[in-house]
Image 1 (cartoon, rainbow, N blue to C red):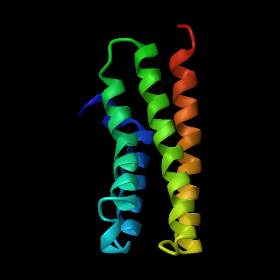
Image 2: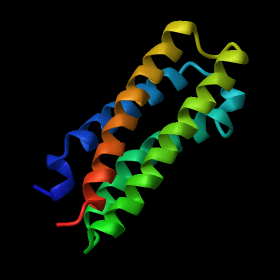
Image 3: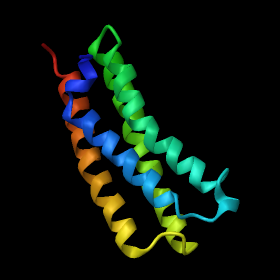
Image 4: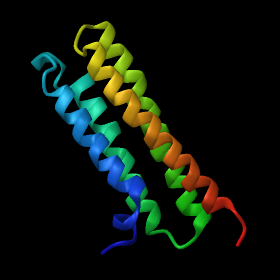
Length: 119
């Protein structure tokens, strides 16, 4: 088992990506290379950056990748608002993604802070 696979935050990030992929599956086909692709890439980036950062040799390096993962979560939230305004996402779908994003953001913040603490 790799180091990142043991992290609850990585596991939540995988669920988050699953949720984003599921809600974007209903987007219009003309959005396939637009908002659909952008939201999916940003959501996948969260777990990917956690995994990549865990492979770095220092905690400050890992913390930087956690910051990038956090930014990707924020990107998805912003894109949810756009998708909602364009009538591609319903209120319940946005609420679900935002709740998952909120939990993930808190977990990422805690991980980042713990990586920055002196040993």
